[in-house]
Image (cartoon, rainbow, N blue to C red):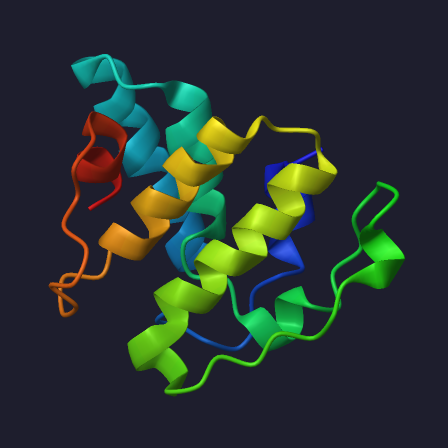
Length: 133
């Protein structure tokens, strides 16, 4: 099950910019905005926890579920500049292992891909993506 504690292991411990402290700040702010705006809280929470996952650390995560031992290591080409694409793919694996329906997985992935303001390729189209952005 996706949780704050599970997500902690997917982030570097020594990164003051994109480490877990950052994720918690984003999570709390996104949760506050989602409640205020009437967004789907489950989508926003999942996207916030997964939006900056370090795909190399994340590939080694400990997750309860049948697919946990079969996850391949994901290397994001382009490093931080393309991290949102790797994080969206990683989110798909995590959420599918948790039994999320495809349309909700896609909603989380959209939030993650659209959160990076330096990449205009995918703009936030949903309330949930706007909240995370």
